[in-house]
Image (cartoon, rainbow, N blue to C red; front, side, top):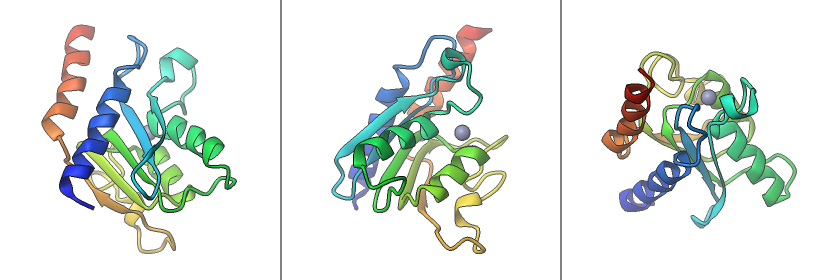
Length: 152
Ligand SMILES: [Zn+2]
């Protein structure tokens, strides 16, 4: 798949982030099928739902699994997210058998897809998604900078 296509997928995640509640950190995630068609999207809704697990990636994976209808398996799919996934989301991506993970901004403090940990590419796991990080990094980081700037 081309770099342009990957960027378009992350751009969709940026659009998904815009639907976050104003109290929620704007992180967006979109799941695409093997041919690159969007299956489901979500924004971080931890505050809106009062749910510590309501990260954009988890919500998008849940919706995609409902829609795809092959039980819980999301084989062949790509998940694009604006921010490097945390340990919970990285674990969920592995469990869902997502094939590719694309993300925008690196998260050096909590990132589990290359920064602090590399959960999805741990050689002890038998399913390891492919990863590309830092796609549209500046745009994705700007979403967070704007949010935290207005919070202060
Ligand atoms: Zn997460």
